[in-house]
Length: 375
Image (tube, rainbow, N blue to C red; front, side, top):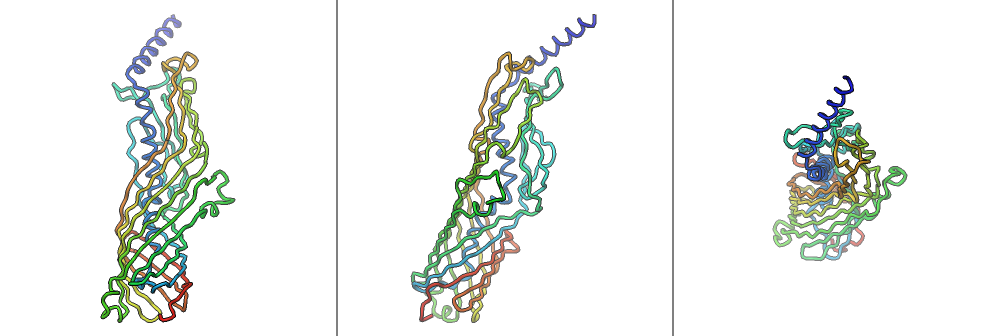
């Protein structure tokens, strides 16, 4: 009698599972994974990516006093954009989040993003009829570094040349900086591409107003462009093991090879300066627009039993999701603040801050390689 009851229960569970399978578009649900994991990645990197571009652009100028014709200067400026821009990602119904969802600068303990197959008729999660486990798998999330405050650092050696008529051009290139910074620290991180560059042109409007210019007032307007390109070979360790409780029904293979980040940034800036002997005091405002992309090389391969109430040994379907992450966003910032530059002979020490709009701060040291003898 007991065997008949068990057999009947088995048939009911099997039919229920089969019915749920019939109402589940497996491929369509799996195809939501890259968009959801990309949404998480965008949120995770928000503090960094949304401020990296304007940090580089606002790293350039700390005075409106333009170099005179054929004067040449070399400066090294270190900047920092501070933020608390963490945004909670909006996951679709296939996903639940367990544990914390850290930002890059948030909690050090990562959570998990659990993918579940849903019965599209009822909206309920499908389960393994023998174990009761949800039919799905768990994607581990990236840990945070635990600072509690987001920051976007910028460092760039800049070469500037005065070309006359109140105009100055600047250029900066910094290849290999991250590779040098991570040497011996991030053993599993192998940078394949690492370059930062910037270019700027600016003009002193008051050059054409002798009454103000002779009284050491300067008003420069300029356009700045910067780009950042980083590529890293990281392999499957980028997210680690992917767990599928019903391993006889679902198997997931992590085939991640690397990750890339790039940004292009365009900025427009105005700087009003009054010179007091060796000190330049300035007010500045800038409008910066950044486009950034984050993408993985490779993704995950998934094999699923054709019927959830059987094992993969009775037949399976395979799916490949690549790239797993594909983020392409644009952001803009308007900031304003104060700057000062101390000029001592050929050297200058510069400070710049936007404490009330964007929280950008920088410090820089410059040296005038070629100096106009008449200045």
